[in-house]
Image 1 (cartoon, helix red, strand yellow):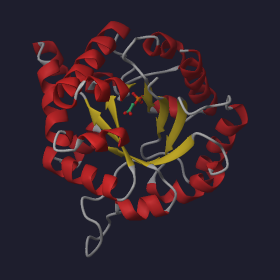
Image 2 (cartoon, helix red, strand yellow):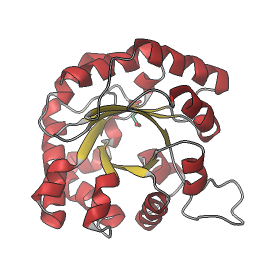
Image 3 (cartoon, protein in one colour):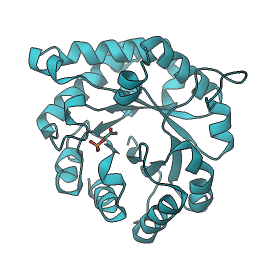
Image 4 (cartoon, helix red, strand yellow):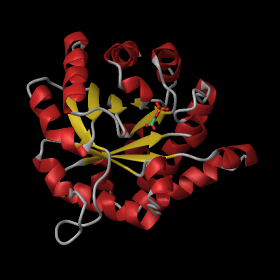
Length: 255
Ligand code: PGA
């Protein structure tokens, strides 16, 4: 059985106190997780270590960074390396979120480099892909997402795929309140899995966790997570309230 994950991407929200209270609220209502059903919390860099201390004794809850540098160390003012992130207690890093691709001009080549430095430093990667509305309207979303995955990930060796999670996040559904229908999500997730099967073989593809992201909330999570190829979610807005995030975690537990 492949791993299911609900991951909360706080984006640039929550100061230390607010983050502390949010994590405390999540832990208070958290169901018993297991190796196949895990939770990831991605606070801003500055909260990572504190969040790690809050969750370190809780099984199957992990901390993620929302980004990492392409570089390992050196004169790169303002950057944070994968090594530092790992050392602060995170076990995942989100790479290639559409907001970083768009607002910070992150290219496919940079994302491939970030993926390498993350894996080299013992982090697992949540690699984001997803098309803008114009591409969806043109009906070329499968090719678009496939190209993103090839450029960012397909230089990896088979054995590294165990440390990769893919998050499909259609840009038109992020923060817009407009969710992909469960059929749209399932179709794309099945496509993504087939692309990995062609490159790495069916066994690797079958073991790959593929998350859906984009206006996922307690009211639609169960339907999305019931899809055969949807293995959980990458949650933005609804991860900022303990009750909503727990509602989505519950949907994963029942899926
Ligand atoms: P949203 O964001 O849940 O607020 O749509 C998802 C994401 O960007 O990861």
